[in-house]
Length: 299
Image (cartoon, rainbow, N blue to C red; front, top):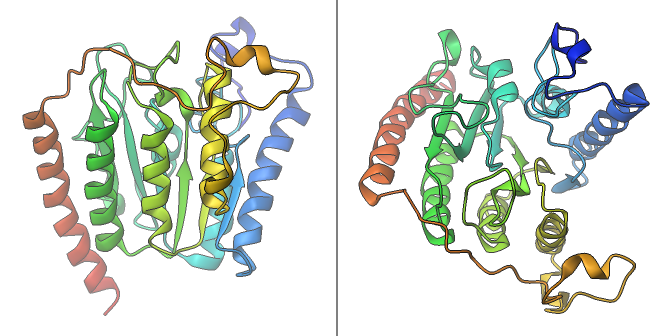
């Protein structure tokens, strides 16, 4: 999982960092510990916000990701649960996880991401549906710049519910990258934590063992707001959240309003309803095939 390519010496997007081995063992170890907690059947949900490094490949680091802790966690979960559904709501395509499972029907990968010419990692088109035994078990939802909460929530609920119903997984893994939020210096969406919160709530309604992981996020104050919100929802304490940021040593980072909520921006939304309907239609047809394949397997 550690980078071992021509880019390692040049740095590229994964420069060598101090204590890198300790760094990646902490990340992957935490995700494996969270996954193991689910396999004991004593817990419905587990969280590792420091996990979710979805770009790392089998033989190289990529996209700031030095280890793919998600794949390691999924492999542990498969031993107990068999079929796993992986959902990625990071603004970037979850290419490393998709590539790991694109040829198998044991893990279905579902990625919601920004997909435009030149936008990293440039993969994850609607036509990428897997290969061999994994054909139709890769699902990509390529979105354009500026999508807002309402459109995103609608697409997520319709598609994820359909995928869950068709595939009938025994365990869920959700990568909650916060770079899909408005104001992220790398992402191009216009989402607030409300969108990610509704995604998490939707998955929780399925009442299946679920591992929640972090991911990207380059506006640190907004990342903290978002994952605090998601933690409160997952643990059933969201009614305790205050609208004001409490006094702490990082208080100044939450200016200028020092409130918990994030307001949507004015970025133009390039996602037409016709395009979104087309995406849903293609995926719906593919899920009919998956549902039939699953039905035959379970006979």
